Picture 1 (cartoon, rainbow, N blue to C red):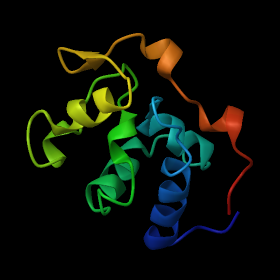
Picture 2: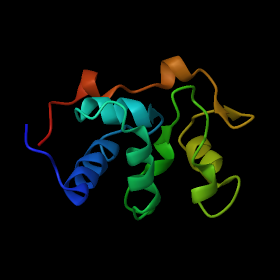
Picture 3: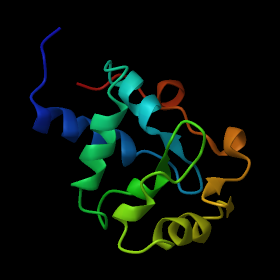
Length: 114
């Protein structure tokens, strides 16, 4: 397998995030695993922190337990929660309620990228 340059990998991350349906969430780890980079959750998170928030729905990506671990990157402590709630995702104490039913696994819905 050819190793991807960071910018190429970021592009693939953004491609996946753009596919997350409104009202659903996925995790950094699920994206990393789907892209064949299991263990690269932090890289996925970093890619989303440097993304253009208005173009990439990064608010739909949470940690493996449904926690809004990246909320401080949205310009205010409640912005990520507000974005999710505007899509019908209930959040309590910085955690997605009914996470298992809201979880969207890219490996179940997307064809391999790259």
